Image (cartoon, rainbow, N blue to C red):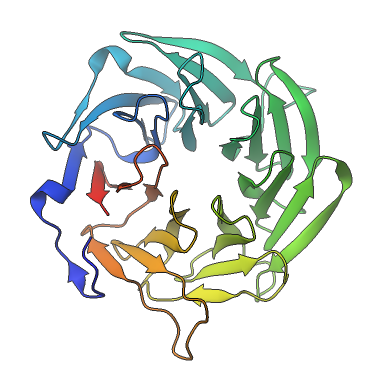
Length: 333
């Protein structure tokens, strides 16, 4: 990505592409082995796949590792590797019908556990998303269409707590501190929960148009005062300061169609990337004070097709991963 607000065409060595036989949605970059990337297929049927890719900066290549590809029931709505670079096992988590854990070995994948958040049935309401707690990696929080958020202790394989988080479907969840998480919902609200006081939540933002769903949530790990959210069918990224609820500190409105994905920079508290149906990935630097005419992105990349997903990982802070159609690309920042 170049540093002008003109449409950029990075040098070929700054864009590395993987072509999948399937449409791609979920993606994750390993903290333990930064050359390993997981991608999940998006096929609207039971049989789906997760491929583990090998990424080489030196040869600018992304190649699947056949021995590490595995079948996945339904399209994974999210994939995440264990957040610790020094974890004893290289675990990968996926969400869909259940929360599943997999161990990635040198030449094989072993299923570790299948976690069902329903206490009364062998079936679980579909999981829309999840987040792995970096401060306490035994904790994973999931969000579901059944209005709940479930906090799992994955070491014990038990539910630590389950909360009715919203009035409607919960679409995304993000951890802040060890015992604090936030979620967004079809009810149009961003709510913060503290596990030390499970009876209460704090609403820090509500959609300006009633019942406009909020779809994505990203908490700034470099400065926990800030988070970002996106609205359904909106070209806007809303930046929130949790110290001043209800009023956004900035609204980023330079996409030409709906925004599908957002990610804060892993190494900077002022940079965020977004991608959307206009086929663009935009890189933003948030000013100390926004000017009267809004904020322009510092750079943009045109993928040429609707971008469904992006990841910006601490394991690869110089690269942003995007997915569109059956392609996954790594973009040098």
